[in-house]
Amino acid sequence: MAIPLLFLQPSFFLLSSTVLTETLFALVFVIALRLHLSGRVKAGMIVASLLILVRPEGFFIGVLWGAWWIADRESRIEDRGSRIERRSSIQSSILDLLSSILDPRLLLLATGMMLWWIAAYLIMRDPLWIVHDWPTDWRPDGKANGTGPIWWYAALLPLIVGPLLIAPFIAGLWRLLKRREFMCGVSAFLVLFVAHSLMFWRGWFGSAGYARYFVCVSPAVALIALAGWNELAERRAEFFGSARRSLAATAIAGSFLISVSYVDSWKFTRDARAVDEMFQWFRANQRPVARLICSQAYMWIVFDRDQWERPAFTADRDHNLALVRQSPPHTLVFWDEETGPKWYGLRAGDFESAGYTRLKSQAFFLEGLFFRLPWDRFGGPRVQHMSLLYKD
Image (spheres, helix red, strand yellow):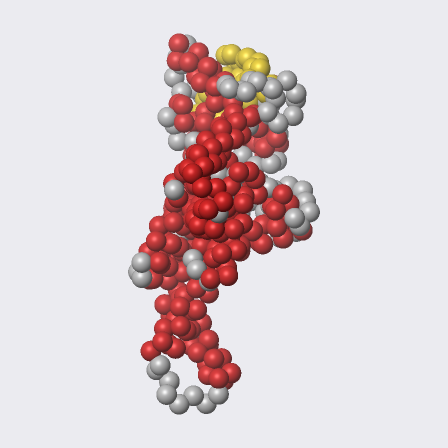
């Protein structure tokens, strides 16, 4: 049941076919979690240290992992009864805590950061490359992506857990907290929930209030929901009687339909169909390509090209235009009229003014595959415009 309860989370279902980093974070997280729970604590710490290489949430999970290790060490000391004569409970507790914090094995949680730093230096030959390359809008109080109420993520629980699975999730969270079971998974979810709620509320670090951030701990969310599922099944067995299996099947089928509807209604995923159509046209009208510049990641994927080909674009339009002019002959540009202007300040016409020839330009009216809704808001048609431009 843990597997369907993972995929039936609408945000996880949405991201399971994308190239965003939350699902990679969830994979590394669940590997580290399994190592930790199976007693291979040091190996779990090393794997958990790699999370910071995937997403910034790795910092919070890394700190939490250190707290788990200290708590586990303290419990092991007490279980062994290693101290026969204790000076006082408060004093000994402070000394035990200090010895745990100063234990060199905690440095295993810095392994990923050290590897990141070493790799950055070997590749870029800049000992402060990570500092110099850090996103300019990722400041502690930047409010780059707006703010929202402190209860924002509580309201997004239907997208994080699934509307029909909220009751099992809350029941599981209450059960596990009350019995102090699976506290590593529970605390991982709660730490990110509190951290993201505060960051979006205060506008810290460019937090944008996306439900998809919780895909990072979606395996823990699935297991918490499973604990609640079992709790409700045990407590309500007599009440539901023979209808229990039918209700369970209905909840799963309903959650699947909701997840499919959510993905189908997400306008941005439809751009892939437009990208595929433009790519097929280019295959029928091939030209030599020395460099590919794209506005969306999927464009590189269909061309099977490396994203590092792209110039070092920033939010500075003039800087980006200068890089475009410096690109070598036989540079192909695959650009859309939403992400391109929003992220880089460039439109297809800017490339033409920089000496590029427009090979093809097409407008798209993209509707859902299964649910075609008439309104312009979430789920309605997506209007997109894409262009292929070439530098001879």
